[in-house]
Image (cartoon, rainbow, N blue to C red; front, top):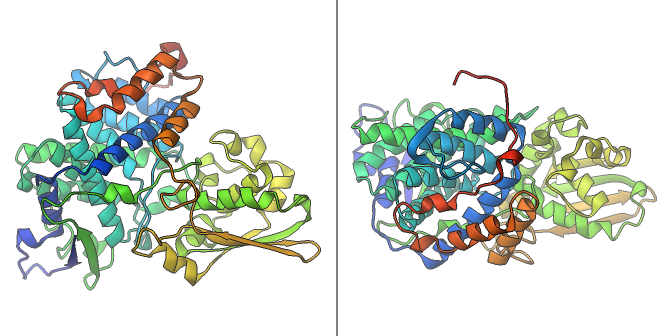
Amino acid sequence: MIVHNIKVYPSKIHLPKKKQLAWKIAEIASDNSKLNKDSIEMVINRIIDNASVAIASLNRKSVISAREMAMKHPRKNGATVFGINSKQKFDCEWAAWSNGTAVRELDFHDTFLAADYSHPGDNIPPLLSVAQQNKRSGLDLLRGIITAYEVQVNLVKGICLHKHKVDHIAHLGPSVAAGLGAMLKLKTETIYQAVQQALHTTISTRQSRKGEISSWKAYAPAHAGKLAIEAVDRVMRGEGAPSPIYEGEDSVIARILGGKNAKYKVPLPKVNESKKAILETYTKEYSAEYQSQALIDLAKKLKVKIPNLSQIKKIDIFTSHHTHFVIGTGANDPQKMDPNASRETLDHSIMYIFAVALEDGDWHHVKSYSKSRAKRESTIKIWRSIKTFEDKKWTKKYHDPNPKNKSFGAKVIITLNNGKKIIQQLDRADAHPYGARPFKRKNYIDKFLTLTKGILDKKESNRFLKTVQNLKNLKNGQLNNLNIMIKKNKLKRNIKKGIF
């Protein structure tokens, strides 16, 4: 790996193209590095994971709307849309829009946390749709996805967006563009321009994850993927981009992030070095913000120690800066304590999540968010007794550069009415790669079978699982087989008319 020092340069100082971060990204996207075997297997795991959560969300409101929009853009030799018969094809950017929304809706796929946040699995829908439309092979798709993960993970390590209230999809646009460039075997210059265009067009604020969180949270990554596809299309036709997009005098860094004196360190592999960043990422066992995964496990463990939950006086959670300020009481969002809040908001309230997991000793992607569940009096009592605090020790562990030491957990102190304190802590979720029971292929398949039960018939389920595990052997034009079809009468429709 090489750590690249990134800073702003005034216009009067010419920064050679080959010294720009966008070029460095393009160089590794256009190299011919050998595909790592473990990375290949993890891509397969994540395609299964994406399919699980996408199928489970097909009849949720935002996904229905996204699908309806995609269906207004049919294309004879286009891409497939989850749930719809594979004989029907659509423009790849709209297929990516629909599938990306389905993947993101439940907040239940993979994650990587460092200087910023990310859900690297968001790269897969746009890459798959373009691969289908362009009749690429399984190996092409693998190269694209592995590259996209590499770029996003390393941008997340080096550049914090959240500090400046910029949504994390700003790292997704460049990673999708780089992955598409690798998959389509584009020249370095073309990828360089696409990365810059994709970043320029995917800057948005974090209000999408603040206050009353709306369905846009599900759409946002799909929007970034769609914009990245369009950026690559434009530069393939010979168009350029704002440059240098990271280092320029009026660039993203200069005007939106750290400013003209900011300095960032972004690690990237050497040219032709095998890409393994996907192996540092982790999926979710529970449908909730990743920083709540360990706390759900912790709540389940604590439940058995407290026979009578009505005796709880207060709960104090000591955790990292990000957990406290994003999903904890440090966010100062009253909506996070509101029983009438949206699912998207409750998903970002560790107070709600911990209260429900403590009461139920479990977590369910639908039942745990139901209106009746959120309004239960006993739950509200526990919920509103919870406060979070930043503990510098947990913040340090959160940012530890060693994946084996990186922690997203917390220490919980439960004080009972009689003054007794019950204290327990957990560094990371049990399903984390370095947790008590790391997710393996069987766990991904079990998650798929659980989430698609009653939606997919056994024949279609078995067909998909067999196909995806044979990904590296799929020939040009066979990637349509990664689509999953369900019976037409099981797909809900939105009869409201739009522009399309």
